Length: 487
Image (cartoon, rainbow, N blue to C red; front, side):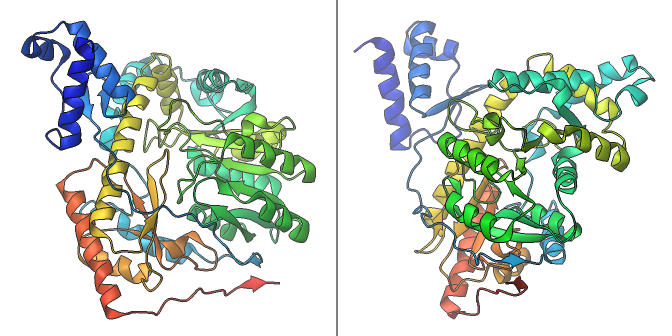
């Protein structure tokens, strides 16, 4: 065994025995070289070997940190959801507002938050870039950057598509005020009031709110917690109800965290083409993958321009800057027209600053660090669930993003749990807000996008205790409500 292998073995033993804990910083290469009386190359090779095993991670300009073993995980959710495959009117906005209004309080443990911690993003660096670009910003940018948006930014976004092997050009892109505006514009382009739209089950509540606002109806389709929407169920819904469009998340779906395999994405695109069905693809979490490469969106396999691919920088780089975009395919001109009439353009200073930042090659370094943090925080949350939640709890194992979907024993009512948790200073997102007809009463979504610390650990312990209280009371007051169905 070579020296670096001996060193790696010794460090691995320390990690697995618990002598080194997840989050601990390893000595620098120079310090380890001196203390272990080996060359810096030996230390580097040992650290590289441990990183390849997933036991440590390098953080940009910060050194190497212990990820630690994944530990005992709760059982995985294996069952595909089984929604009532009918068309439903949507009335969720009041419920969503009631829940999310509470999650925005900074004094709460943010397990129910929809956003990751802004502390994990290079906000100071972005501010410096904006400060350096603003004095050079031409007054004509207020005109030049109207819809479809900054040419420099669209070019930079196009380059990232091309790096993934996708032929998306700057002229195919429209810059928007965040991904949510892009998604809503796309929805308006391909639907009329009264139309039906296919969504996953459970689905992102903002998709349901958009359907409600546009007087559209929802068809919730069976969805697997690991690999996404059931294509056979989707085809049945298409044949029976003739929907105008579908709104899907193929990469790290919110709230499940599911990731559709590439072969399934190809089959999905073939299905869309067979029925000439437009698809709105929400891909805001695609950059937050934990594996070795970014998963391609369904858009990568679309040869007929049926898929409108929407994303933003809000989850990957610049929360609060509200800069998103859509690659609109055959609908690009309509999207550009509607964007112009709706809000003219996204912020010109923000677009110019983001274009400048992307040109300086810091984005991918930041993303690597962010992905490592999210993966480690996911593992911490899974271990906390194993330690503190009751028997019968199951979760998803997302390979990216920052959400876990948790399935509790069926007698637990997470809407009631939400109120109990708020009284203890903890927010959660109850499962019922992710359905047009208030299903998933015993489920909840948890956010692992915040630095794992004693506050979050304590919050998980308290949440487990509150769940146990409901179980002790034997509360069986949950029922699958099926109101509003249209045969």
